Amino acid sequence: MAIISSDGTVRFLDAEEAQTLLTPHVKAECERRILAIMPEWRQRNTIADLSSDNADTKAAAATEWAKVTALRTKSDEIEASIASMTDEQILNFNAQDDAHWSE
Image 1 (tube, one colour):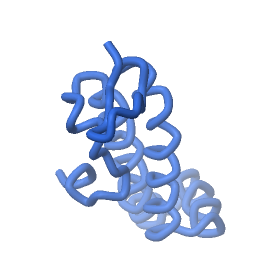
Image 2 (cartoon, one colour):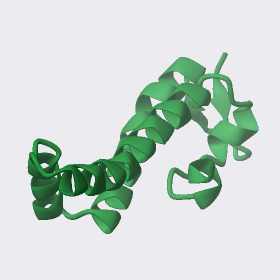
Image 3 (cartoon, one colour):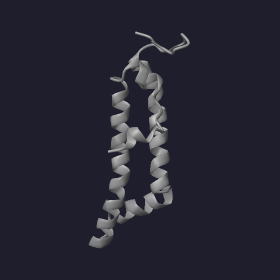
Image 4 (cartoon, helix red, strand yellow):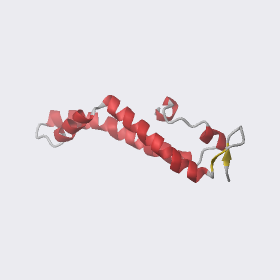
């Protein structure tokens, strides 16, 4: 069933299409949030530190990497939730809204 905006414009053919078209926005926001907490150079260093023989270095890297993993997991949850949103929620969906990303 089509998802129609208040002006009568068909925005999405159905929730599946909405999910397909909104998912890239969620992924982009996830990337933005990850890079805000851990730039790419730090990600590379952290990944290398995960293989360290030093237990403290390895533990610190695991703690930092868990933040990235949490954002990726939340992104997956947000993407999956789009299909079950109401038409109004889909029409008002903003991937940058902090409400989507809170625990």
